[in-house]
Length: 164
Image (cartoon, rainbow, N blue to C red):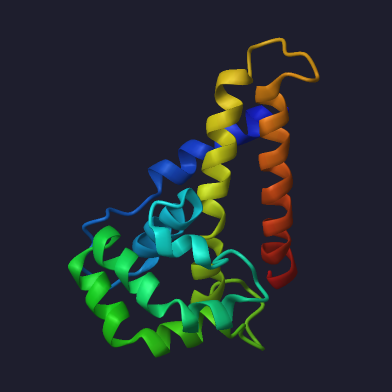
């Protein structure tokens, strides 16, 4: 059941993903690329910071500015990088300060922070897909790896549930 839900959700993430070449200043595609790179540990500097924790977000993004911009320069469009590099403090305010009156989850705070979930959900979907039709034993290493990934995601998703 769980695997069917994930297999249904994953294509929606892929189909709704904006183009990396966006030139309209929208930074959602950039954040998606950034969080994927941070989750995968593609850049050495991202391993030094926990970009996925709610409690460390303001502190992390302040001290990680050079790292964030290094990744953004490589992973984002020029317009997105230019916007972030010139308005980083504004971005920091939006991504770290939860709106007091907006409970509809429509604010950029919720949209930008929800991008943290995309690489985790993709990781789970990628691990579930090849196992969905197999009859695995409880101690199969692939199944244990999936359970570990689900546990890590569950901890990180508590952020999304508590802020929504």
